Length: 293
Image: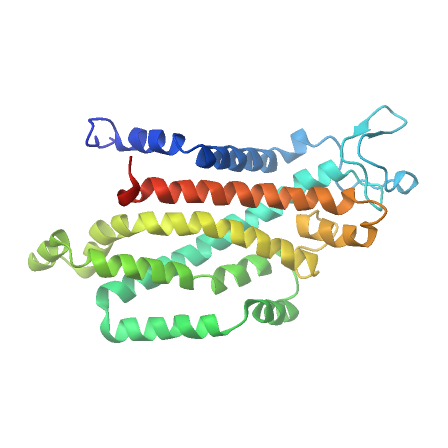
């Protein structure tokens, strides 16, 4: 049962109304929902097979109509594949990598931040030094090394990004825990002899979850860009699976003759990342108690 807020309304309803008053956040939420819906329903909304090749009708401009009367709104690529279908299906690996990598890094960072901030001392020193060591490795070199050993695949990309991105979560959660553990309700629980793990789960984790959620939302946009960059370099999901980064790599050769090959997947990345960032900014402003209106 939802707890009532200061106005007597459920907290979730108050939060939704505050978020809805921020137009940029609302726009971002609509974009995120639309991209997610397209990715989930790709086989049903896609007008063509994203892997179907037609070399006789390669590099056709947007709006071209084939002999059967079917229109290709975004044109075809260098192998005669429909650009719109590939953009739609390209949302799937981008969102899958984004969600999975954020969950992995977020859980690792949450656990590390909770332990480091609550226990302090040597535990804090060891975990934060591990974080410093992690930050010392350039991500792209680490990704190339791991992918070179394991081979490029969806699982490898998720693992590399997930394991290498936990530091930001750990530091944000640690900072929140350092403040929360000094609160009266935590000290009262400690005085009553409540076990540390119970204090962490019941009292500290719910209060540290809000900053974690904001970081996770904003970090998803970064992960999508990273996945596209790795696919562009040939280190991500391999062909023939359509990816936005892979489509950009294919289209860079034809920028002067077939601009639509790179333009539309680039716009897809722009819209998805912009929507997530706007939603994340609105979420941060709405959840920040100093900015509540």
